[in-house]
Amino acid sequence: MSSARTRGLWIDGQVTDAAEGGTFPTFNPATGQPICEVARADAADVERAVEAAGRAGEHWRARSGTERGRILHRAAELMRTHRDELAELEALDGGKPIAETPEADVDSGADCLEYFAGQAASLQGEYQPLDGGFFYTRPEPLGVCAGIGAWNYPLQIACWKTAPALAAGNTMIFKPAELTPLSALRLAELFREAGLPDGVFNVVNGEAETGQALTRHPGIAKVSLTGEAGTGKKIMKDAADTLKTVTLELGGKSPLIIFDDADLDNAVSGALLGNFYTQGEICTNGTRVFVHESIHDDFMERLVQRTRRLKIGDPLDPDTDVGALISQGHLEHVLGYIEKGRAEGARLVFGGERAPVNGCEGGAFVQPTIFTDCTDDMTIVREEIFGPVMSVLRFRDEAEVLERANDTDYGLASGVFTSDLTRAHRMADNLEAGICWINHYNITPIEMPFGGVKQSGLGKENSRRALEFYTRLKSVFVATSDVEAPY
Ligand code: NDP
Image 1 (cartoon, rainbow, N blue to C red):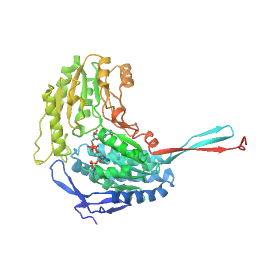
Image 2: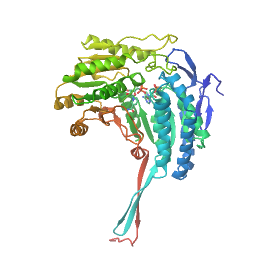
Image 3: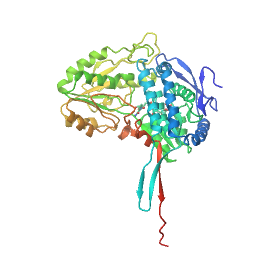
Image 4: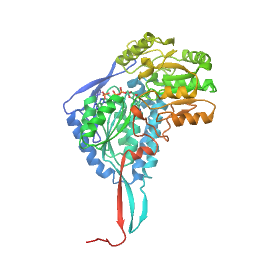
């Protein structure tokens, strides 16, 4: 059995070692120190998880939606009871400020369980009378689903994938990102305490190979990934052999457009939220900030003034606004982009350096960084950085900014700050993105569909729409008259 310093896998309602006994360390990004060892699942463990999830599914899908919802509801309550502990775990394993995690990670995960607890009872088909009979449709669960998570919102991602899957009668095997393996294991314990039957939720930690074993497994009906666009393509190819359905929540390089009639303080708040929250490690971030040329200087002055106030520090310190990047490797990656920004002629107006933090000497800290006078062809403007690096670009008119905003392979999110409502809706109509925030940025209420277009993904999470991606529709025709056969 796993020791106190080693966290096991969670299969069939039990903690278990990996079949081959493999483990890997997980680190605190703020110090670089290992937190503990974690069992690494290989193909044999994935096999065990698929068997357990398959068995559990036979009973789970037979329960009423109300019953399934009741358990999800209890799990949400338990998340709220353990809010502080879960928030600390997310901060410890992910480097995220403790000022953010109670709300952004724990509450949003619990909201999701609660929302789909309510939806579970309302899954309905259609009915239509026809000549000689009628038909009805049955939304049925897909079976065993796999969720594969990114490291930036580990608990939230686990909830966003698991809640709709379970509400619809599926079972779930979740693979967290290797860099943040801990919170999904704690979620599994809370699910059990809430009364979730063994095997309905399983956690197999590991690396890309573990994800691949899930994606290729013929016993799995669906894969939902949150990760990079390149990973999404690999998963789609791997899933093709067994014709699995996929939901892909991928990267982005989203535009945030600030018109000259915008409320400037709100616009600055949007730009800060859309670039520096969670150290900029958010897929929907509005990292291309287009500012109307007539307000550029005023905007920059207010932006820099407020950015200066952000406190970079130990994620566990409640006063910290900007925590640690996920790893030293990622820090190098982000610093590399900052260097490219300088080399390609963008004007650095704030940050741009590593940020030493007392007591966290081995941590991966970087200053919130702002470039202006950026041009559309610069590397920092074209590629997803996934760190606190904002690129400001000037624009002159609506048609021009729209064309430039859409000139990207990605299409996850977008934002528009303006007091002209007609223009706001016109922009929402024409922006090529799965989400458009008008006079706000980066809020993701559970009731609102979430997901990208173009290279940012396929399918939707959250809202009632998510259930469509965890069910398949069976059409049932019922004859009410004799069969007329010409033979
Ligand atoms: P990755 O794509 O590197 O990894 C995502 C997950 O996929 C990890 O669990 C990873 O395992 C696993 N994985 C990697 N390769 C394979 C494979 N071939 N088959 C199956 N699974 C695989 O993304 P990151 O974790 O680095 O997260 C950052 C990215 O996620 C950014 O691009 C960001 O934009 C995107 N993202 C998108 C969101 C959205 O909702 N649209 C939200 C949050 C992030 P392991 O890590 O263990 O190698």
